[in-house]
Amino acid sequence: MAYPSPKDQIPVFFEDTSVAFASKSDAKLRKTYWLFSLMNQARVVNLGTFFIKLALKLNLPIKNLIRLTIFEQFCGGETINDCNATITLLGQSGIGTILDYSVEGEDKESSFEATAAEILKTIDKAASSKTIPFSVFKVTGVASADLLEKIQRKDPLSEDDKASYDRVKERVERLCSHAHDKSVRIFVDAEESWIQGIIDELTYDMMQKFNKEKAIVYNTYQLYRHETLEALKTAYLTARQKGYFLGGKLVRGAYMEKERLRARENEYFNPIHVSKDATDTDYNLAVDFCLEHVEYISICLGTHNEYSSQYCAAKMKKLCIGQNDDRIWFAQLLGMSDNISFNLAKAGYNVAKYVPYGPINAVLPYLIRRAEENTSIAGQSSREFLLVKSELKRRGIGSL
Ligand SMILES: Cc1cc2nc3c(=O)[nH]c(=O)nc-3n(C[C@H](O)[C@H](O)[C@H](O)COP(=O)(O)OP(=O)(O)OC[C@H]3O[C@@H](n4cnc5c(N)ncnc54)[C@H](O)[C@@H]3O)c2cc1C
Image 1 (cartoon, rainbow, N blue to C red):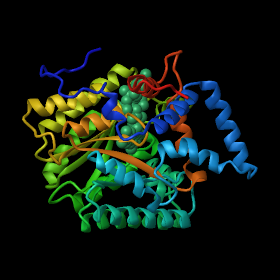
Image 2: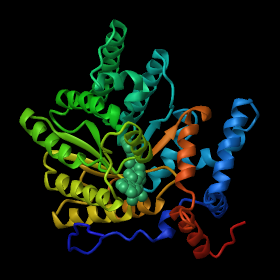
Image 3: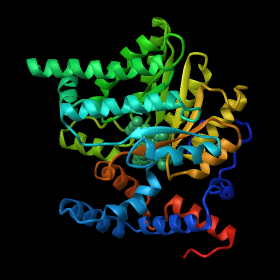
């Protein structure tokens, strides 16, 4: 694999499961093992997903079952206050929380307003807490994806469309301006390529307004796209020319299959790299570029990739950037890659977890994606499953 590799010694060891799972009791660890061993089996996940969807449609009482299993593993709760226990627990290990109101698939003006109101609450909560370093939102949480797509395609807009889009811009500005007033950094999540152009446009407008003194608004860069590394460099130059700081969340990208399918169906050039290697190389090059321009770029690495996390830590060391430099953060999702989060935090790096929350019905698509991600691929057990198993073995306790 052709990674660009700094020669320094790798400064963090991610295999230490005693650190990763220190906050989990034996009973809790056994339960986690049981859950990951179920998710490890693709057939169980497929069947489970089918029955959960059916049961919810038929109003069968399965919410408690979901709550006590997969929801408890990957979500902070149904409401913002339900997340308090998770915020405290993570905080005790020096890990921050990023409250992610994860309601998906709503497409009404009233839901967009309700979502915007909830995100304002997460900003307020971050402002009053030492362990909530960022807030986050998805533009499709406050805007119709169809409308965004229409605008990106430059289709003619009706008067209604224009009025809706004005409301979208107003909502996005309301969130970013509130974050700025409260001095809370805010991530704008990246989405599918057919709406990402317009999300970028909205986000850069906000950066120009609110990033004059420091990075408050962060755009998300999906390095699985061919063009993203160059776009990041251009964004930096534009920010320098216009006199604002660039905030960047670096991710590989979550919509690979969807992107490939749509490109194939509509016969256009697939925007996603041809191989994982190419994505990995661009990801690490993006880390290089940002660290080399850290005076004007603040970043958060949203990744579960151990190599990239170590690569960034090693590169920081090489450039004499302090481990706890507030311009550099690492983030993982709640319930995943604790070996990265807890070991990085213990070594003194800035780390936070996305803590999704929302009503069970509404976060179900998110939960299903997490379950699918943790199934065994080509007979190889999921990484999470193996880590939990190795910690059970280290503690000398059985799985049941
Ligand atoms: C805190 C956090 C925030 C996130 N925010 C966003 C967001 O706003 N938007 C978003 O889209 N995603 C987001 N993600 C998800 C992210 O983009 C990845 O899907 C996920 O983290 C897996 O990638 P990885 O870097 O963790 O690790 P890895 O497991 O090393 O990489 C898997 C990723 O590599 C890429 N990949 C895999 N196979 C191939 C291939 N054959 N060719 C090309 N590329 C390939 C895909 O992007 C895949 O998801 C976020 C993740 C985290 C942890």
